[in-house]
Amino acid sequence: MYSVSSPSEASRPFLTWQRILDWSQEHYRCRVFSKDEKIPARPGLLYLVQKGSVRLVGSAQVSATGNSRLPRISPEEAFLGFVGAGQPFEIVAQSPFTLQSYAHVDQTSVVWMYWHDLDNWPHFRREVLDAFRYQHQRKLLWLSTLGQRRTIDRLLGFLTLLIEEFGEPCENGYFLPWSLTHAQIGSAIGSTRVTVTRLMGKLRQKGLIYTQGDNLLCLPAESIAHR
Amino acid sequence: MYSVSSPSEASRPFLTWQRILDWSQEHYRCRVFSKDEKIPARPGLLYLVQKGSVRLVGSAQVSATGNSRLPRISPEEAFLGFVGAGQPFEIVAQSPFTLQSYAHVDQTSVVWMYWHDLDNWPHFRREVLDAFRYQHQRKLLWLSTLGQRRTIDRLLGFLTLLIEEFGEPCENGYFLPWSLTHAQIGSAIGSTRVTVTRLMGKLRQKGLIYTQGDNLLCLPAESIAHR
Picture 1 (spheres, each protein chain N blue to C red):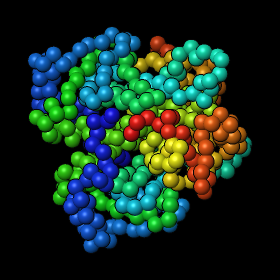
Picture 2 (cartoon, each protein chain N blue to C red):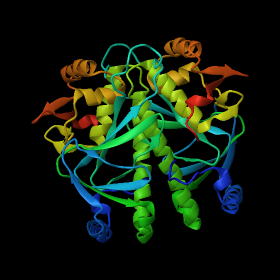
Picture 3 (cartoon, helix red, strand yellow):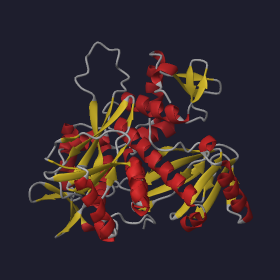
Picture 4 (cartoon, rainbow over the protein chains, first blue to last red):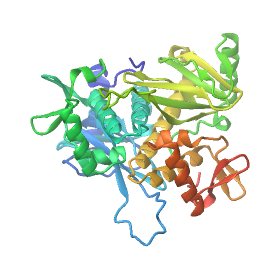
């Protein structure tokens, strides 16, 4: 449906990707992270997920209650999405907001480079920019669902978008291949762990979601747009 | 702070931009819209705002309560942001979500083209892609603030980001040069018109926002990151 070229590994000229991996090994620009390890990413650099999955997290220091007597225990962290294998990401820092990246699964491998390193691979640069364009489109859809007033609608919209993008087929639909805690889900949709747990129960009762295997989230096939 | 090249008109080679405008006139690919007029944009095409401001709106048909007896009056529309002069935009359609674009002010002028039209202007294509990359970064910050649990924090974060990006200097800070209704603000932060009106009053009392002239929103200079 998108006119953006699919950034999946299948469609990427294997030679370029292999050359970039070789280059990153040679220049020590590749590192493997374990689950939930923080990736020390800096603004201005470009990162590519070679394997595994990266979790982007944002924190906002904006608080309308900053001058109250209650100390804020910690800034609120919001789950901003996954970056899957073959996809680029970058970190923005714009006070009062900061972005951070974590390996979401074990053995997540990340390659980094300066933008000018891409001068060697102009076609690859365009692929990277197209991938960001695609990610931007997904975030617009994400914002569409977060504008919904009812938390349960935001929750279902959020899960639908996530599984639509990253889901893998299973017997009755598609499942998200990585776990996500109720606290993480709550942080994405402006709600709390407790509320998410309660609403997930409701969605399950209505047959709109189910879980399989090691507590992985699934959606019935009919809720997922043709991919 | 960003490494993205600024897409402002000042930094754009004047000749390219002028050539594109000439081309769009020649090919009848330019149209002027009046305030709140819908721009009949289609997925797969590229749109450039030449003058004025475009409002992006998303609607989600995802509803966890779809099988209730209560008819939904209309799908909820969420305000997804502005696209200012010199900036590109595109429309994504991915069931169950749809995006729409409206002229936000009178005399908004929009140019459109196919992506392959950009083959004539490879440097301009890169500028367009860099602009989308910048817009993606802004949306990640926007998602960071929407993850905040308290509606008043989301509201203040949302206004801060908007005025940071589009604000113009005034006596005591920066003001948003376009009006935005409380219903539109509510639709962006997952709240209602009534709640936004109440919380805007609170923010005004605390001196965190103020209005000037024709009910335009302002933030004190110290709340805006150095631009």
